[in-house]
Structures are given as structure tokens and as C-alpha cells.
Image (cartoon, rainbow, N blue to C red; front, side, top):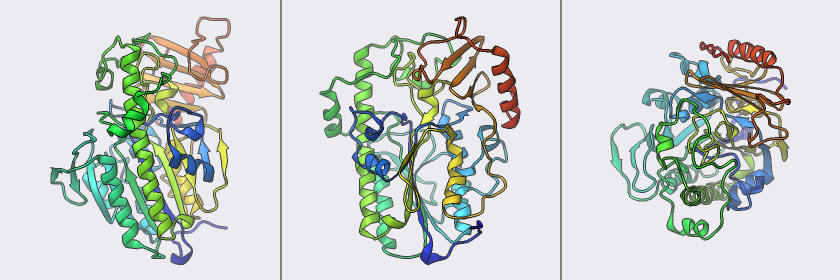
Length: 419
């Protein structure tokens, strides 16, 4: 069936995007984490595709989420999405509006007021970039830049808006795109006391490989994320952070359940494509780091689940970028894809600022930062604990350099980093 530019109201599928902030890819119960409670995310896993090797391509500043959200909206790779005119093309919500969709937004927005108003016709409470508290957040109403303190917790507040939107629409046949971008589980980790109690009493497993301080200087050890718990850190400090982190994810999951129930109550669940994703990963003590400003898997990999009509239940292990969500949604809706939306090409390629780069060919991965170089075989060493550089298992440096040059050219990376 040929793709088209608009959709008939009665047969169209809705789209719901649920976006979390700083959520590691290994924080879903149904994906094997036996220490965290995520029953509603588990339901989405049981209904759709689990993308177990989805990546954020990187970022240009400590707030990696800025670039991540630009890539999701534009369908472009890192260097093109964040170029001066990177957001001037048809963005995902605009593409659906062109096809006859109503569009709604609430939550964290990191890409400018003008772009927000271009994309969405209506919305709820909005957090315009940066970070903010989970308790009594400072938010603005959609279309109004005036910020004020709101009573309550951020996650339920954003959920309230989404549920109200769904209830107002009821059983209306005209399709919608609802985009709810939570600020959880980003710090400050002000967890709900009841959720925190669940995890404080457990002996949580720290992310591998845990160290009290970084084992190498990646050029970004003084960024804000690393100062939340300054190195050297103790296991107890990191376990306390992890307990609060898991508690925020459990609160997030509970509120996702509220949204799913609203869909079901309004007879919309069976005709809604649901996308759950995180914007970037987080170290949480792995490799002696706390943040996401690195080329390690824990910082680059993100959770991604897609469920809904026409989507088979399966596990997808093939590596992909988060920015591919745009084209996948269009294909599921049988919509034509704008020419500005990119297709991935060549080996996987990642970057952070102008001094960290990584390339992956199959299970082989090489990362550059400063004057250092690391190699890992992700098939046998998924936690990147054994650097192969300087060992008999080190593979061709020239092959990786060639792949890095090819990929950097393909994605328009202007910075040349050699090692």
C-alpha cells in the first residue's frame, strides 16, 4: 500500500508518545530488572516491540536531552538536528497535523517556545527546558510563557493534563497525537516517600562496573551531573541515589497506568500506537560516573517500546537510533515521510561535544576521548569492563578509523578526532 499525505478520520490510529528523562535502558522489569517495579511498562512490553539496542546519538552540551529531543522531533541525526536551521523542517507533530491529527503536548520542552507553538495546537502544563524539582515544580500554561509554582508533584501533574485531554475527547473518531514528556527520573531525586520506602529496604545491585571514582578522564568530569555526588563515592551513597531513582521510575510507571486506563475508558486503547522512550541513559555509578556525558552504553542506550494496532509482539535486537522513531511512526500510519527525515547509514556513530566520539561495527565498539582510546566487544562484554586496546584481542585500528571517518562524513560531523 502506498504511503499518503492524509488519513481518513474513522480508520486512523492515534499516537501517544510517553517520554522519560534520564532513564537507563535497564530499568524495566519485563526487560530483566528484577529489583524495579514497572507493571505498566511491562504491559507495553507484552503488547508490542521492545527495541533492546536503541541509542541516543549524543549531544553538544551537558544537557544531552536538548539534542535528543531535537532528533526525535526532526527525524535527523545529531549534527543536522542541532544545526542552526535543523528544526526548520517539518517536525513529527507538524507532519501529523498535516495528516489531520489533533496535537497535544504537556511536560518538558527543550526546543524553544516558537517551535512548541508550531508543533502543537493545544497543551497542558509545560516545563520550558532545563531541570526542575519534582515537588512544587515551576511550570507555565501552554502558550503562556509566564511561570509559576504549582502545587503537587511533577509526574502526576503532567499525567493529569494528558488524562484530561483524553477524557475531553472521549470517543471522538478524529485521530490525535498526544506527547507527554515527563521530567522523571531526572534529578533532583525527590521521590514519593511511599515509593522510596519500597527500595530503601532492599539490597539494590549497583550498575556495572561500579567504581568510587572515574577510571579515566573523559574531559567532562566537572559537569553538573558528576557533582550531584562528588567522587570518590561510597557504595552506600550510590545505593541511596539508586533507590530514589528507581522510586521515581515506579511513580512514573504508576502514572503511565493512569494514562492507559483513560485510553481504555474512552475506547481508544485498541486504536492507539503507544511509544515509550527515554531521552538518554545515565551512569548512576557505572565506570565511576554519575551522568550521561560519555560514550559508554549506559549513557547512550535508551528504552524504547512501541505497541498498538498492527504491531507484533517481539524483541528487536538490531541497533537503531532514537531519531528513527519519526519514520517508524509514519510507516505505521501509512504516511509519506518527509525528505528531510534521515535514514541511518554505515556503522553506528556517536558524539559528545567536540572531544568524545565512538563507532560501532557489529559488536565491536571503539571510543575516543582526549588522547585515550577504548575498544570493547559488546557480545562478550556488554558492560564494557575489559578494554581491549593493548591486548592480543585488539582488532584493526585502521578499520575502526576508516569506519569513523566514513560515518562522520555521512552524518555531517565537522570535527575530526583521531587517535
